[in-house]
Amino acid sequence: MKSSNNRPLSLDQFNNLLQQSGVVDHTYPLTALVWMPYGYKILNLTENYLNGLFEKYGYGRHVFPYLVSSREFDRINKQISSFETGVFKVTNSIILRPSGESAIYPMFRRWIKSERDLPKKVFQIGSMFRKGSTRGFMRPNENDFFVEAHSAFSSRKEAEIELMNINNLVEEYLRWLAIPTLKTIRPSWTNKPVAEKEYAFDALLPIGETSLLNVTYSQMQIFSKAFDISFTRENGIKDYTYQAEFGFSQRSILTSVWLMSNQDNLFLLPSYSPIQVVIIQIDPENSQLSEYSEKILMLLKSKNIRAFVDKEKRQLYKRFSKYEKIGVPIRLEIGENELKYSTIKLVRKDNGNKLNHPFDNIDQTVNQTFEKIISDAYANNEKKLIDNTIICDKKEKVRETIKYGKIAKVQLCNCEDCTKKLQKEIGLGEVIGFKDEDDKIEGPCINCHKSTSNVAFYARRV
Ligand SMILES: [Zn+2]
Image 1 (cartoon, helix red, strand yellow):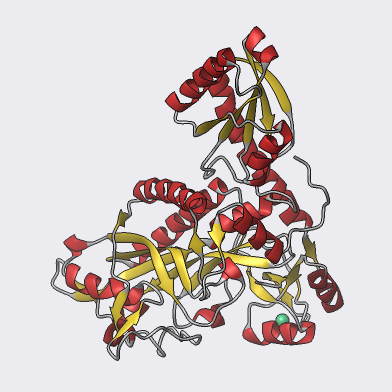
Image 2 (cartoon, protein in one colour; image 1 turned 90 degrees about the vertical axis):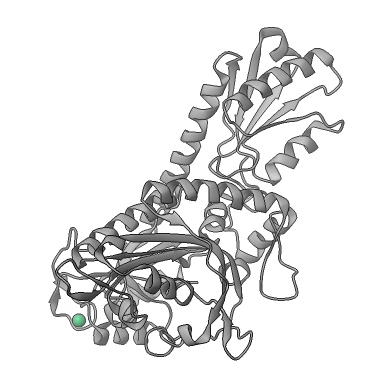
């Protein structure tokens, strides 16, 4: 249904909605979320989807321990990753994993001996622990739905191709969540020495800040050298593996929900909504109506549609609003008229459109409506992203754009000097990344005015 007002949903309001709808409980005494049964189902559906997606891209799911040896962690700490916010120590020789490398790469070192052992492609879903955190689900100390994938190859070329594959995987997942993103290459001086190249995927949140949802890394031999992951080629020559990796958290799922929700109600996409269709039997005590709603339920269930019949004996508007509140995307209404003519009233939550449909083929129409809801959501979110990305040729305009919660697109030399000077003068926000090689145009750098074909995006990032 339409929102009672059009003010953007703030993070606090969104957190309250999540809490009231039984998705998560924020009141845990530490900065971590408790996933409630309804929220767990959302995670579970996402996890099932991701299992299939990773399989399609050739990744095998593993379960690596949360406890990692600090000796292994020290191979990357300081020299490669700074982990400046700190890690949780269990004992002097054990820490809770702040990322997967120190759990996965000691095993790559054991598993990979010769060219025949490659490629190796693994992924895992589980918790990741980092100190220093705030803002609810955006950055908890324990990220309990952290998805990461690591791959190792015998040549640079293969790892380069894999980086493109994992970018496709990420984009496929984000489309399932109906989240359009700005895909950029992160400034190269910020990722050394973690990766040779990094792609960032930022979404624009309703609060006018961007959220970094995914990062893909071309690590090449940086980590394989640190962890001594080497293999012997058929010609007897030893080499280190070439690697690519990426990771993302529950933040992407909740961002998808946030983008679609309003001041009053959550909105869940059919992709991950635990209840996709609620069948409201208008008169709960009419036995003929009960038979009819059961018949519809059976048909939908036989097509793997997650449907539910509501027969609660209370005021109708309260029954409607219960499912509105928790974000159920489709409502079917069954009353005496529908029974008489063997029809069903279908109501879309996203736009309130109503349709009277015959019983026959209702399952097909429901499935088509799911697809339409997801593609409309993507198109709406994409329009917002495009409308709020403003080409700026003056620093003043960049500042103004950022202040109003939009993204500035600027010509900027891809160098540390021009980027830092620009950020210093603007005083808020940051260069979130540079446009990929495609469709580059020449223009004067917003900072030094020399001609450049590099285009950067500037925004406030959560
Ligand atoms: Zn410049």
